[in-house]
Image (tube, rainbow, N blue to C red; front, side, top):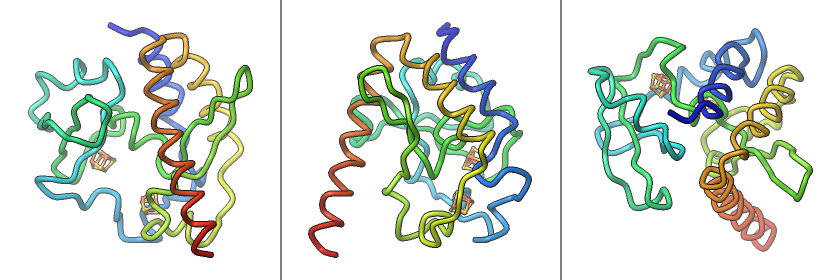
Length: 163
Ligand code: SF4
Ligand code: SF4
């Protein structure tokens, strides 16, 4: 079991992008309205946590750098949410020793927090950075984050071209 992953998940269990405001109320819970082919991309090692959980289905996907995704049934116990749900619509940015938080531009056309440029909660940002420090202790997870970070930066570049 990846203890750093567990620690990161714990840090983000009780913080949310807009603090006490339930952002799901802004969009009628858009994030949780997936279907049988739309799921949350798992971080390295996270699949283990869902193997015997009847509330989630593990599925292969092409887009997650070789890792699987999970599908939920649209409601969940907060403590069971995958890391992808805990950090969305933001993502860690690793720049040498510096850790920051960037917008996850994959959600730019759907998530009101991004579309309306809402300010994230400070405690959430702090916990994102702390959680990332745990995650990157594992080299495989660090590489995974760097790959995804690159994908988000590519979207940013494309957006600037079409602006
Ligand atoms: S993260 Fe964005 S899309 Fe998801 S529930 Fe919150 S406001 Fe809605
Ligand atoms: S795991 Fe929970 S928070 Fe994540 S999409 Fe499913 S219902 Fe929503």
